[in-house]
Image 1 (tube, rainbow over the protein chains, first blue to last red):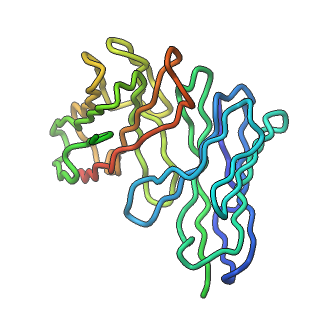
Image 2 (image 1 turned 60 degrees about the vertical axis):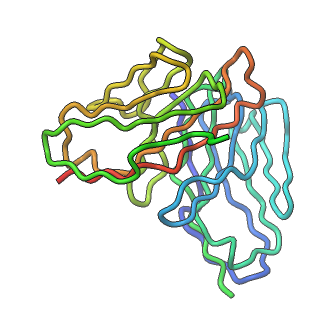
Length: 112
Length: 116
């Protein structure tokens, strides 16, 4: 049974700081790992997807890495901005791309 | 291209009432799934389907029924609503193993359900 854990549960940083959000999963036989952003009361916005054969993906100030052997993924946010304040969720898809399991999320607050 | 469409967006039920949350996608995705999200928590998988006529249970299936008669639609049924089912429900879809691409999940905007 796949379990996904995100640490820390909440994080508050000053504007401009670089930060790392962590995601761990128990079953390394994943098809892909996705990172999402969720603003309060809103739906999910896809940020990055890393396929099982890849090690990292980058989009603007965001970089996500994947280490299947250790069951870990990290989301690196460079030069954080107040607009980055949101909950960040990681999700691991099982074999075939099915049965995607989510972590509980990291609530990020970037102070101006 | 509408993507994943969920209806209704808001619903209030009384305990014991039944209802169906609708989910439709126009991307020809084989895989569809339902999640619930409770305050301060991530998404928990309720049921999923890998194609028409094929469904399976997720992490929290009790109290919910699903069926998949077409590729486009994946309704979620609450037969006898309970206050514990008060939540925000999200439907998602992606490709299947045959034409899966990256397997990226696409989400609807959510349906907020309150059971009194």
